Amino acid sequence: MAHPYLVMIMQNKRLVIFGYSGSIHIKKWAKSLAERGYHVRVISLDGDDIDGVDVIRFKRIGKLSYFIHAANASKAALEFKPDIVHVHYAGGYGIWGVKTKFHPLVLSVWGSDVETLPKSFFYRPFIRAILSQADKITATSNSLIQSTLKIQNDVLHKTTTIPFGVPIPEASYDFTDLKKPSAIYMKHLETIYAPDILIKATVIVVEKFQNFRLTICGDGSLKNSLQQLVQKLHLENHITFTGYIDNKKVYELIRKHHFMVMPSLKEGFGVAAVEAFACCRPVVATNVGGIPEIVTSGQNGFMVDPNNVEQLANAMMKMISDKEMMIEMGRNGYEVAKQKFDWKKCVDQMVDVYQSF
Image (cartoon, rainbow, N blue to C red):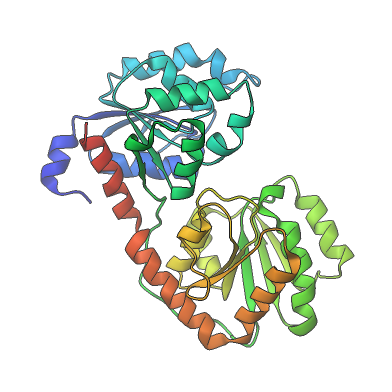
């Protein structure tokens, strides 16, 4: 919590956030900044209500929804008489930010908005426009900063890295039943996160460790095909699908496993790895995007090449084979999370950006 004097200074500050109010990330930012004394209005396309925060939602009515609602979204923002407008995601919500012509304007890039969308001739001009108009640009990793500079190389002076932190609980190094090794996957079931590669790697792992168990959390378009793949490979006794997991239960579930696996093909930041570290669990992950800024191979986990079944399986088996090493890596990961990714410190950094205007 901010110092009482700072809260007194900020209590009259009015903040508009353009972002999807159904996102756990937007909810955390909005609620935390409201707790710091800001009057917050979130303007969203669809989404949810947020306790303690004024939310205005526009209904999605097709692919052009951001353009259709741009004028009304801008009006809703300016009527709030904001001191700061903060755009989360340079793509769709960036269009609304440009429309306001408001300053000071903060932009947070999220990943696909600066890595995938700019390949579209349709979106690229709007993304360049919001990058130019923004007074400050934040990203969760240095990797995303570099992706941003590839689009607009003259914005480095106004960029800053603010990771998406997590609450850091008291350290708990206890592992439940080390004789039955287990791992957890906590991402959407989509091609970009490569859950199919993980399932194929598990075939190799169970040949050596027949009591190994993998829990796959999340939902997505690949769910049915992944379940069919598990049946085809006769892994029903080794792999469990949980479906969507409420964010409040994430830590509890992570602690029931020995390590996390993230076989992603792309990853802007990798908050799941930070959540694993917060629970004193090491991570096996691919060397992509922002992951190397979190996972140090050999210290708090292992990194492997993306889309490489054999490397992934070998790293998992190495983790299982040396229990003392696995516990030590979990300790190291916890210290990284505590020092670099404490959520309160991340909110402090964002408040510093706001206070710079």
